[in-house]
Picture 1: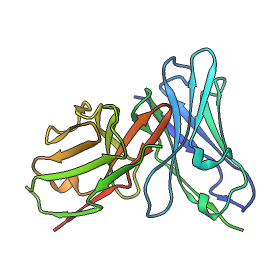
Picture 2 (picture 1 turned 135 degrees about the vertical axis):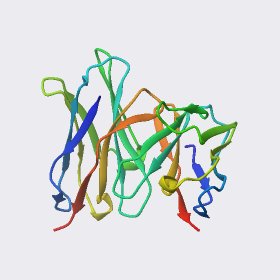
Picture 3 (picture 1 turned 90 degrees about the vertical axis):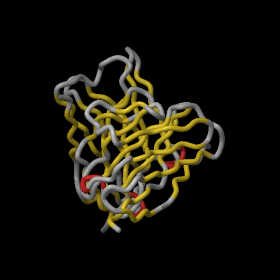
Length: 120
Length: 107
């Protein structure tokens, strides 16, 4: 059974870079035709897709324009994980961050989520 | 960008009720529409994909329908485990967009 687990710091200072990893178990991040995505949920609010990465020999990345170029995703096949970085964070980036797998349209496997608070 | 609007935002219902949640797109969209259930402190769980396909293992009381710009999630007989927040989600041209959510509360 595919499992995903987010990891990273729970507290980030304003203007710094948020960095998270998602460890994939019982599956490979280099599986063809599979996307690996990041979704976040501010406290008490709804879900927002951040970005996704897709591997098919070459890596392709897609991002929500609302992040205004601050988000970057990458894959580390040696560690079988994928990562998210968001630069210049503010309090508005405080959220539970989820990693998820999707075959294009829908997200069918999710991590448990990690709360990241932006505060000094 | 295509916007997804769910209604109602909150729904109060009793066990055994038939419940319908609507998701409207800002323009006609393909059938790349999914529905998720989320309980407090948990990750969302996929229920329906491609507008009307039930994910394996999801109870048959859940169903999805719709086309064009209007889609619905129906719970035929609400069970105690179904009190949760439900989200629709659309995919189009490498953009994944969620509705704002519908909270199903105990009446």
